[in-house]
Length: 304
Ligand code: MLT
Ligand code: MN
Ligand code: ZN
Image (cartoon, rainbow, N blue to C red; front, top):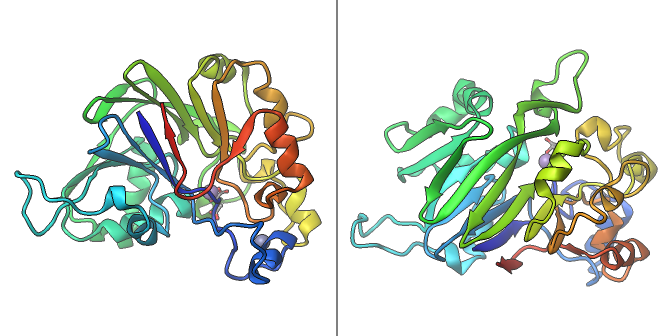
């Protein structure tokens, strides 16, 4: 199984177009310790030919151009002028950073779009997404616990994780941390190997821990290093938890939560531009690396 990181940053990317937080400021100054990272997405394949796109970020077009493995290659059964190794798409929630790239895929290319009924329903109800011609894009609702094979040899199961509705759907009191079909994690398996992709998770209940224990690889929500990071960076009032993202450190952080779970390879993804782990050589980067975590970057491949 191959996992390819198309976009390692959270919504906004790194740097974010209008941000002067300490990390973005280093970017703008040309500091090479901070890589440019695009928004949240990976691709997965069991055969290296057909790829499942997991989330479609606003940066998708550039991500495809930067990733030769996703260049169009004509197969015998394709129209010789229109082809792509992207054979299917799965969205894990309805956030802008995970669905806006669907608009990039509007050029009469046949592919199935997988997601929960709730997320696909929201997309179907948004007039702009009607640009995805149903004659080409087949929306396939999957339920938690169901196993399906969107590309040859790659077995996929989605499961609910604590989260919330997308930001643009928040109204009144928001139930953050509820387990519903609006935020899911993904289990990918092929050739006897298992990987988990969970770009957003508000907290880690015991059953979720038990599920992930012993996995060959985990790509997990690395949005914030500390829960109040945005406030301390002077860029917003929201805590990570309020946004549906558990912090890496502190009470209930992911470093502690995954400690001792026997996960062979663990990596942070969906990293917000305020997160100091983005700075190579920072104390915070050293802390996560010392705990056995990798910080993903765009173009990184994990072969299992
Ligand atoms: C998130 O992950 O919290 C969202 O992507 C935020 C957003 O919509 O910008
Ligand atoms: Mn996001
Ligand atoms: Zn920033």
